[in-house]
Length: 417
Image (cartoon, rainbow, N blue to C red; front, side, top):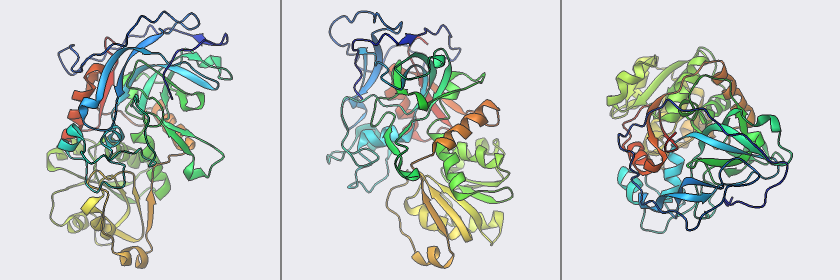
């Protein structure tokens, strides 16, 4: 979706948020790390909506390294079309999908993991595609995990949404498609997202929240927690069952830990040894270092030879084969990522003769997201914010994500918020 200001519709309404954020930036410097490039020309105040006619945003100019991310002021504020709402962004959390998209990792020619160096510098082989293997339109404003306040609505959108705090479901769907193939756009990839002061989304994707959590805390839930909840729903994790979670310290991993515990399951976390103490603070039932030379034996020493009921995996790569060995007969496996690499070896005898179920997850259902919002409202899950950066320091925030030393989520908030 292009971000532009057009002649307004008289039904458009707006509300200016006076809510201030108490969150502080993790960087002491307020000087942008980007080459700030304002768009030429003065843009007047929009006479229809109180939202300004221009905004600050980070635009991705093409596939490549961090230099492709440019912080700009004077970017035209998008306008809500029919059935859409304009959200004043309070915060937007970072996800691997933004780095995967920027570096062209989704292209099928890529067989490696996204290393720290690759994430910084990008590829030199021309790889470039979105999650659904289509070409991307530039410039693009990324950012899938948005929390903020509705300030304007378009035709056929509920005006009662104006002034409400929302978390945004990043999956834009066509309900006429099959249930597991309904995503037609993903926020920040196929349409402009939340690395900006304002973003337009379908009204159906703006979920009102009733929570005392800050916007930075609420922004940790979309993308990570709905993906985790969908994996657990798809695999049918039940009370008393055992689940093994890889990449347990990341955004999806920590989300899965909490959501599995809410189901009454026994949780075994796999992550780097340096993160063990912090993961044990989340009351996991067992921990295995990812560097263990025999992951299968290490997990078996904790849960017994029978095996795990469920494996939730975001690592893939060479670990995949071991994960299938951990499962009991009739066990279930779900993957929503491959930070360890997209190419894995499989012994089909494990799949066939253990009657395993394997699920690939990229399409959380709207019911899953609604269920997640209910858990947030009830205070049954908690946000894990590792660091908060100003939007103008998005490059630095992504560098922190690439180091893989964090627990939970990294968030950006608009400068001056």
